Length: 504
Ligand code: MLC
Ligand code: AMP
Image (cartoon, rainbow, N blue to C red; front, side, top):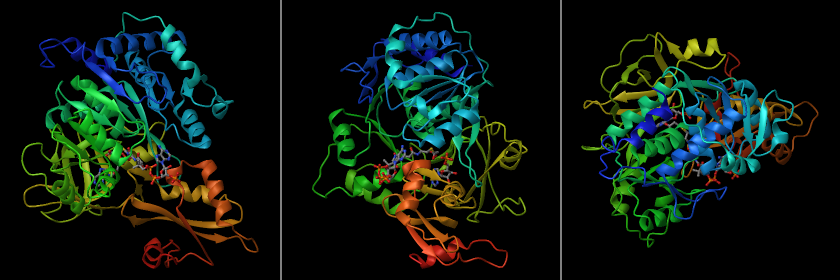
């Protein structure tokens, strides 16, 4: 089953969507498009489908075929959805790129993925790479003039649908290969578990280049035949105002979103009576925030756990207790083990071990990275690098990580990637990057630097160098200069000491 074909069949089948009059006349997408390419009242499903078939025609016209990779670096827009579904429709795979990625990040992704076509904001950024380049500025006109394709042969469900890049411990990101089947498994499991229906109305404020905003939120809503209202940049008061005004039913966020709701003045009041579901994930939601949100806004946030490599795999229940500090239970079809990472022994109740998973949503590996694939996937089990315990009722609680990962505002930051950049900054000999607790962002990125002998290091110069190389959320918020980094007997930098004594 191809992902677009499966979605399209649902739109065509009113029974499947429990809609007496069919879903096609309903509004699919509305709200703020950063390219201003949505009609004022939003776009209905029938029109969206026609446009996707136009995008398929345009992509074919540019020489794209099944199996090719298309890199899409577009801001939130109808064009992005058309190209995404059009590419899937012709059996091509998509690579979604942050529209605020730094130039070296974008170049790396386009090159590493072997993209045949790159739709990018600034064509100069990918100059010299062996792919066809289409500037975003030209996309709308091309899509509007495209010839609609009638017949789209269905890709195999094992075919590559998306390359989703996630960083590694040693610097460069690696592309998790997700098949049509992988993505469908997440979408279908959540459709059941979260009770999506054609009557739902999602307020969408997450970035569209990650599994959360793209698959869980956007494709989840399109699969359901629900309505989506877009918000281009999240702001807390604006989001609650929209939930109230648009009578939305579903909202999905990272913990920072909820922290910002709770930081609004106490006298800010919103009518959230239309809402049926607030979900949270991508980083740990403090139990206190779940409780405070319930007390103040009258809704119990449903926390769930996932990872690019496997989609969403654990979730608190829709009906029944949503336990604060817990990510709930495995979704149907997901096999979970919590094991002692050193021995592989299964942990007892309340004993902390690594989360290992297997199931239909789990990636087959990283593009062109056999070694890292073999480390992450052992006999079909995904080693997540996250630490958790299951309580006596089976609720899973994520308690930490084995992997060196900072999650800031719900975005993953790999210290190794940032250190590699900082070490090339003027005058810098060594860099250690770590995450410190932060009420708003969960964790904030900070760096300790050591200068080259006889060289002066200007923190401002280092930061502006980093800004050229890295997306803003990866750049350190604080920098300290040290004579040397604390190391253990093995020579390994003791980041725990840096964190304990910060600002060292
Ligand atoms: C924000 N920043 C970005 C960015 N969005 N930088 C590059 N690309 C983007 N898309 C930068 C801001 O410019 C700022 O840097 C810094 O991040 C911190 O942001 P802030 O100024 O404090 O706030 P804000 O810009 O409002 O961003 C906060 C946020 C954002 C919460 C809105 O972090 C966000 O959208 N987070 C969602 C992340 C997400 O969707 N993750 C899902 C991963 S999938 P500066 O220097 O300009 O101040 C996954 C699997 C799963 O994990 O389980 O879901
Ligand atoms: P990514 O690689 O961007 O998909 O991020 C996946 C990582 O986010 C996981 O390995 C976890 O560390 C983290 N994560 C996602 N959801 C949760 C959650 N609800 N609680 C704690 N950590 C989470």
